Image (cartoon, rainbow, N blue to C red; front, side):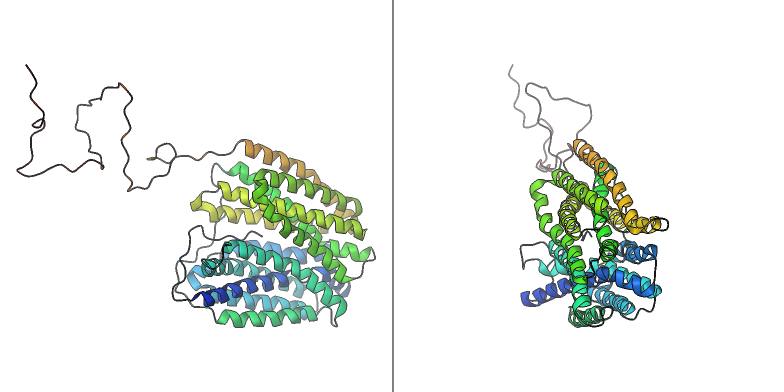
Length: 468
């Protein structure tokens, strides 16, 4: 999802040489990659778990959606925890929770352990995202031209794309397919723990305050457009990660490495298209992404995972649309959100993204109570496709009625001015005579100070006498 950081620039960490700062940047990036990889490691293994534990389609979609439904409040709750506790403490706790999640999957005797593992993974990633992003942003300043948030977002999506591939390849070509992927992940978490231990311990810089989602007045229309666009983007990605593995397995595709590759194609194409957002602009990026998402949803509604080539084509198109729609919606909200309320606005946008990723998968599971999984997938994708034109219309209207910046009281012309900044006098109009209000006017701060003491002259003493 969206990786957010404070809008106020953090100073370069004193006392750390550039080599040490670069090492800590690599530590933050590695933690994000490993945690996100582990969160999406089970995706190609869902059909195997479903067969081993004899669980229903509804329960399987709940296992997937638990991660999204836990990550969203965790991101809001622990977003600023590193300011009060320090990144080292928060990242250690996140690694411990991620290890608990992987252990639950490796030792799972039933579905309850899978649900507990997904909840632990959601808490771990929700807590680590803010701390790792803050660490990378602080340490990377002055070392690279790239912004720290850009580096963190790249690591986040890279781990998300690597998880299904790693899980599918290990499950297909290695022994103990439901155990070995998570043992490997536990080893990587141990390496991350060792690296985090050597982070510099900084003094607390603030209080731990959970982020309260809020939509500022004047930005609700562009926020609604962005939230609909981003939620639809994550709806398509969530359907691929939650139900496509089971559909491919039931259509005869038993190679878990191929299933993992199809899932990763969505996120890899998303990474490749997100850099195009600044060139296209937020409006064109959102509309183009929605168009690609519509094509992908129609392909899914038509085949429901019954054809591997068509599903792969739908994954590539969905990834391209996801990158443009998701990146364009995040950029659109960032452009209109007030600087002092950007964190609250981003929190509300993240809620929309996570709900878009989790709720449609649950809807598919509910429909499977009376219909086959393929039919349920076709119905839900058709409903999502019907919402795409509505989202396009809202995007067009929101860009036609862009909110204008308002000038708070005490500011002229909507231009921000510091309180200590003097207000320059307005220039008189040509030929206009000065007005006299009958009371003494305040002197301008730009005027020279009055003389005081015995040398002070009466008003008009310097005026030459009038000619008779």
